[in-house]
Length: 126
Image (cartoon, rainbow, N blue to C red; front, side):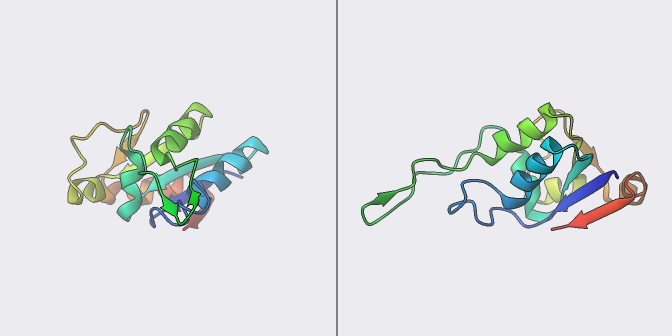
């Protein structure tokens, strides 16, 4: 069954896990044959910016050797055929409408969200 993942919270667990848990979960479920789309809302629209990288992180003698690269993770979802969407007003509120964004990304005005949601029989919000 076609499922739309709606991701609103950004950068949760990206230090510990080196990726966003829901982006990783979407990759895994697509690999298992699932049919998914991903809608970025709220702060998660920041994931759509190209070429952003987390800085190096160290605690005591431990160093995080694999920093997160969420924009590359999002781009690889598109490469797997997962449709990507972002709420236009959320991009605008964060000054990202003119930023370099991952492709293909469909920018959806909030007023058109009901039509988008109607395309998916199942919607999961994170």
